[in-house]
Length: 107
Ligand code: 2BA
Image: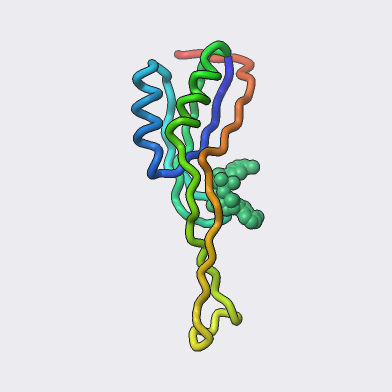
C-alpha cells in the first residue's frame, strides 16, 4: 500500500477530487498554505493499493495545470513612496510524494 500526498492548486482541487471519487479512491482533502507564497492550496492524502498509484497520478496530472501566480514583493524596504513591484512565479501543476505505508488499519 502507498500514501500519495498531493499538493494541488485550489482551483484544480474540485476536478481532481471528482475524478478520484469516480475511480473509487478514498482520500482526505485538507486546506493548506504554501510556505513560499503564503497562499492557499489543497493537500490530498490518498491511501491506495500499489497497483492503483499510477492511475491516481494520471488523474492528478490530467487535472492540474501550471499557472503563473503573483508574488508580491515590497521593494525599496517597503517604503510605499517608492512603489510596489509585483513579479510572478510558476506554480504546479501538482507536487506529489508517494510513500510506503507500513500498516493500515480501520478501527
Ligand atoms: P509555495 O511554497 O507557496 O510555493 C509556490 C511556488 O513558488 C512553487 O511552486 C515554486 O515555483 C516557487 N517557490 C517555492 N519556494 C521557492 C523559493 N524558496 N524560491 C523561489 N521560488 C520558490 P511549486 O514548486 O509548484 O509548489 C507549489 C506548492 O507545493 C508550494 O507552495 C508548497 O505548498 C508545496 N511544495 C512544493 N515543494 C514542496 C516540498 N518539497 N515539500 C513540501 N511542500 C512542497
